[in-house]
Image (cartoon, rainbow, N blue to C red; front, side, top):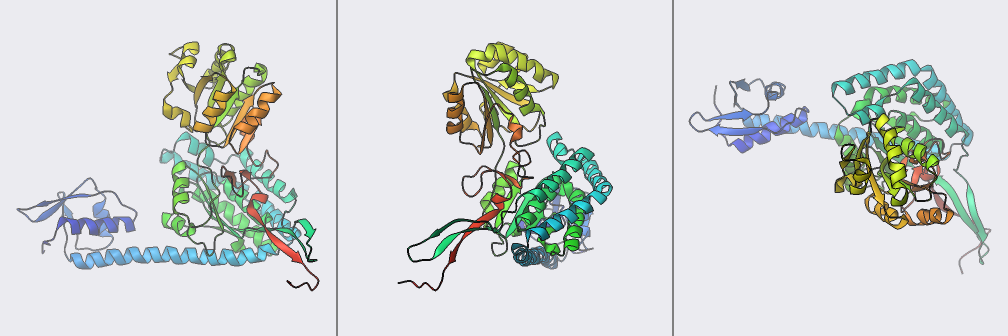
Amino acid sequence: MKVLNTRPLCIYYVIRHQCRCHSFYTELLFSRNSSSNRLSAFKDKTISKCLALVNPNEILTAGFIVLSQAVNIKRIFLSDRTAMQESIEQYMQTVGQQARQASRVLARASTQTKNNALSAIYTALKNSEATILAANQIDMNKAHQNHLDSALLDRLELTPTRFTAMLQGLNDVISLVDPIGEITDMAYRPSGIQLGKMRVPLGVVGMIYESRPNVTLEAASLALKSGNAIILRGGSEALESNQAIATAIQHGLQVAGLPEAAVQVINTTDRAAVGQLITMSEYVDVIVPRGGKGLIERITHEARVPVIKHLDGNCHVYVEAQADLQKALPIALNAKTHRYGVCNAMETLLVDEKVAEEFLPRIAELYAEKQVELRGCAATRRLLGDQQVLPASEEDWYAEYLGPILAVKVVSGLEEAIEHINKYGSHHTDSIITENYSLAREFLAGVDSSSVMINASTRFADGFEYGLGAEIGISTDKIHARGPVGLEGLTSQKWIVFGDGQIRQ
């Protein structure tokens, strides 16, 4: 066999592209043995498997790779990769075109038609409960095998109780008032024309999310009720669950006579599909990402379509000096421990120095029962002991733990609490516990978050609890939608003008 005399850089280039084509990509290190004119590969035992998929002339023996016909191999590798990219691009273009066509049908659909579709989806889901829960169990088994962290496992799991709550959310959406077609602000102008504003759908919503298969139904139901088509791209960890739910949704649309393309679940986990979705401005009107901070940052930076988002949920509860501690204790416990892996869980507890000595030991005892790790400031550690509280770093004040860890800080008063929240918080949800009405009003005005609460757990920052039926996400932006995004957040307004033959003079 002829040994190829070529530079290591060329070989690295060829192998790297091949590995990416077949999803085996890891960094490869090559070195050249000058005496034998051979290339040594280190760090990757799967390379022989990759090479075997393309050309029989590759041999992996004793840690050395000998390549023949390198020019042809490179051409095959690059051609294969290009074909895959084109295939995904064509697929996403088709999805986008179908969604746009479906959105035009939905924009003119009556409330009764949309509710009929949602009712048919409810029936299909209820009849498919066993199938959907079984599919979720497959996802859970894979997730355990892949050692996903506890927060992701919690988000991924669909229990019978959660399934029932999911169906209840769908029923709530059916009962909501349809905002589409609502006309407001009608007024006559001096010219004699009458103008106002009419609420209309956004058009096509692109949704990218991780875990939480219930989001598939929540997003689809809200999109349909508000007259929008939606393209859903869930995480690979929830693939079986999402496909099972999507099947029921498609059946409901078919029964109601609406286009099945009104709700489409992307059938590939290839990340290239995400790249296509967030740049298809001709077909997609808004992107809603739900997931980890890394995912949302990527979407925000690369999208050519408007994005409704929040990066993380670093929520606070501030126990003010005039708080009723009998209220503060259950609120602080619930806000942290009700569920850990959610964006509206408290991550930092602020306690006024005037009540810290009385309040902190009592709440610390409750957290100890729940095995919550505490990370505190110097004053907190002095009151509770260094053995019970780890020292908090600067990073802890910014952290969204999504687990049984809590940062605790003693503050001098309302102003320091507001300053801390606005500096370290994520503008998601923050709560004050106080019996002083004036200070509560100052907190409402001073904290720059999408939800600000008085004497309530941050866990209430949720579309269901806000009476929205469900939510497509939570926005910490200040334009268009802020806080839990329900039906109205998926709509816009257009000017409408009524005339009777008037012309511009």
